[in-house]
Length: 216
Image 1 (cartoon, rainbow, N blue to C red):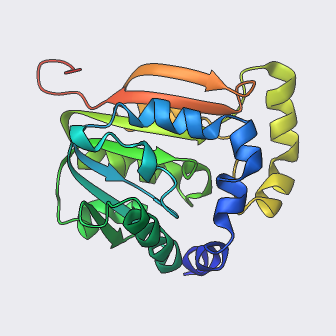
Image 2: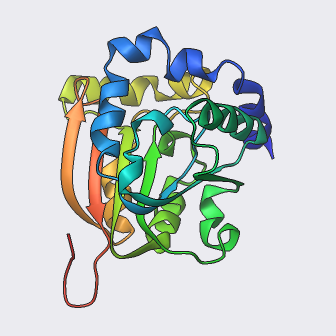
């Protein structure tokens, strides 16, 4: 698969972009920490990449942590990071396609599903969110931190105009996607949306409805 091969190539230098000085200056580590403190119970992280989120989980709140990625190269880096953090025995790493989660994970259900900065590169983000939703127990929580189209008019327009160039230069990233629309289309109830960096980054907390209402 082309995407898998591409991210195998990116694995060695991925942290320089998504975990380097620029990400630090934009406050990405703090945003990761703010979101991931909500993760609890049986947790699934999609597109774990090199494991940049691992330091920010409250392990005392987790019953289990399963993480998937399409790229074996990325998973190797994530495994190294888990070992460095003393988490090797508490993280199950699985090579899988986010658009086929239920099949790859044997229909397991989770209390929390996490995805950060990956939705923009999935070939079909709507299908990916639907799979994440299907993996949630009723009342389960989806936590997202993603690139999104800004609600500030001129900036959103600029994103639309430059989207093809950004996609070509930025590992296929569609930085003008509407994350909330994908979440709502998957049948999830959005409980919280926060915008950062002039609206270019969005964090979303959504809940899977249960019979008789929504559990929070």
